[in-house]
Length: 403
Figure 1 (spheres, helix red, strand yellow):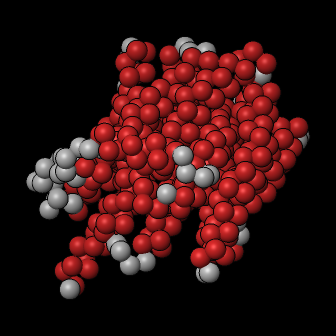
Figure 2: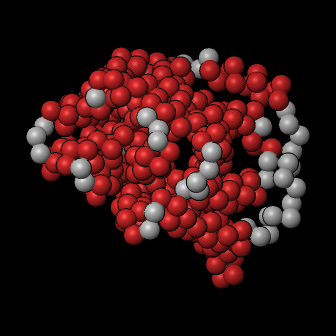
């Protein structure tokens, strides 16, 4: 029993570390965007297009998740994808033709997307008892790593160069994946594809899930909350750096954004079952929009960075809530539901980051960030529609069944 317990904890740690690979890829690119653009002589709009290339890989992962990812040896796939995520983080820092750099971002989005998609299901396979506790810890560690990565990458850039920053953080990610390789060594000799690919059946399942009450509403919500989030992650460091021409203030601004998200998830986890998720989204995004707008017009770095942290506290649970609601709408098709919601995220990454960059180039970054907050306000009718379709129908069904 002691050996089995040790083996379980070894695998739990491995999944946690693989999730940190995704965290490093997101936060480091968000912090280093300015320096990548400078190294390649890119305009802001070209930089936005570069960042959005990750969504192409993400779309491919979404299709996999919906159609046939359940047929794979998930442990083997997540370890391989974590290893390649680390290698492509390193590759971002390598001096190369710009077309190759864009290809690196596509592949980084693909393999990091696989890890992000599989971590929850693999964790559940490992730990059936108190699985929610381990999943909550998993996302806490993701947020904590995202707080540290901007500051660490900026310090590494100052001490070495662009390649040095990506080499160290990507190298740490590779080490995490090698640990996971050791932890899941028993699963690695097994075949990659374990079950027959039922593509036709899965497409029918996709149509069925899309038609479920509330699924379209939560997909629109995913798009809207992601539109603000991706722009904030990939632009806020640049915004704060330009205020006082101070790169360390840019890194701190991005870290505070992730810190606010981490605090929001810690607090919400204690009260999640007491409120309608749709109402939490509506209230949080309204307050987040007000804090974000106030940040744009506020004077002084400290006040601005405080308001960024408040915005993140108000909106930090947006994405976890969308996945929870989506899976609760289709509990027997949670993988398909997660894939549909992920599509909203990657669509936002594909569209809004380049568009925001173009607006920032022509009208200024403050105007671009101000506009990026509008989807939070537009979320209100979608959130109330979700509440009406899901929760009122649920109460009606409970009364009808005599529950």
